[in-house]
Amino acid sequence: MSNVLVTGGAGYIGSHACKALGLAGFTPVTFDNLVTGWRDAVKFGPFERGDLMDRSRLDEVFAEYKPVAVMHFAALSQVGESMSKPGIYWQNNVLGSLNLIEAAVAAHCTNFVFSSTCATYGDHDNVVLDEDSAQLPINAYGASKRAIEDMLRDFEAAHGLRHVIFRYFNVAGADPDGEVGEYHQPETHLIPLMLDAIDGKRDALTIFGTDYDTPDGTCIRDYVHVCDLVNAHVLGLKWLVDDRGSRVFNLGTGTGFSVREVVDHSQSVTNRQVPIKEGARRAGDCTKLVSGSSRAMSELGWQPERSTLQQMITDAWRWHQTGHYSR
Ligand code: UDP
Image (tube, rainbow, N blue to C red; front, side):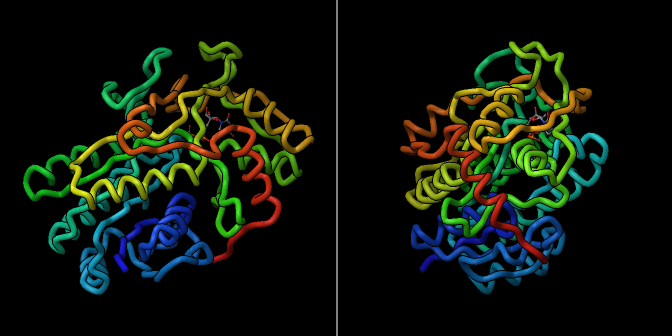
């Protein structure tokens, strides 16, 4: 069986990717420092603890498993934190990725699937973003991911590193079998925070900004189910293995929902009230991020199956009530 090195395989998206890779006949080898990931989330293949800043540890793991590809999820990913602590984003995300890319090239592992973000686009007034939209990030998280995209292009030109870049919109939901799910400590994302507020684990959900230029004044995002998202990664991996060349794909549904609309859907799915406070804008937030994802559909054959807001909140709610990890 073919090994795939999955950095961040103990995290939310990485753990779902490991499950999808296993189902597709690959062996996912998780490489994770467990700073934000969970040992309990590594269920579908071997685990190698390590940090991307440790080049010799990376070399060891490449030598041991001889992966056919890398799927690179490990990153710091909080917009707000990236504005107050940009240094750790440039250090972990950019320098860590440089180490990983150099180790992959040295090991002749030249298929690379990269987890990027719609935050690389920045604020474009009320347009649907396609892969050719200008990348003008307004936060350090997006800037760090854009830098890694540039790095991949340079390493392709010099060393033949083939890459598929996925720019995610807002990832939500959980494995319907309940084997893995979203569990961050501390939590910063909208849907899990809302579920915490619904069942009394926190006092209220604070809406970050109600004066945006949107119909109800709150930010608009495009939510995609984590299972659909990772299925696209398996298609991206096959794309590379089939030698179809480097490519960038957005992953979203093309439909945007405001924060208030997500609140309304959560109330109807759970049949409970979300206690709400209206707060100030969060630094670094774009007004509206909605994906044009037709490229992934037409070229990769990607078809989202669980990405209605109702389904994502239903799956997240089930996981929220039953699942958690410990280190
Ligand atoms: N948001 C909010 N309150 C929270 C967390 C998030 O109003 O406690 C908003 C946030 O401003 C953004 C949207 O919900 O408009 C999604 O934020 P999240 O952090 O989940 O993902 P991001 O878009 O930053 O990747």
